[in-house]
View 1: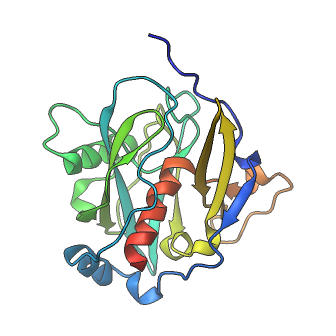
View 2 (view 1 turned 30 degrees about the horizontal axis):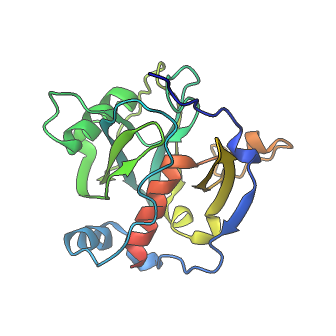
Length: 239
């Protein structure tokens, strides 16, 4: 079987065709643990914005799950990973902990918890699952179940060096403000492809923004499936 060619490009250099400046942010009162628990227990009527990426491959679909970990610090922080460059898919990209489902996994939650333990050492005793978003289908045909969880501080991160280059946190308030959402567009194999990015300035250990002449060194470039799922979370919370 002939496989489509997965494009190789620098997503940072793809033009921005729109931003969310005209949209309202999620109110801070909605971005705390109890408000989120209540939201998922009594969900509103809403419409996900991004459910499927344009296909890059003809491989058979595979089920997967990711954990969207919301760490309960002074403000909620989203825990993210940067994948190593030697991964077979999505190498070097920023992602949520997660991966392909195993036959032994009881459900998507079991997959997300197991993968979080294996990838970054995040123990399930610190995790409170509060809900899920609709499945997201990547261009590489992974059918991803995003599992939303609150995470108690005090856990120890132990990244698997084969899969994870490093782990960092981004304020949920930053990701839920649409002025930080950039929309990109490019043409590939005769088809227009659009996706979101949410570039976040890198921080030093004392919380100060790092400065660099190179944009690649100054920001965590959150894009693709990760940004798409975060955009859906925004739509869920703003509905």
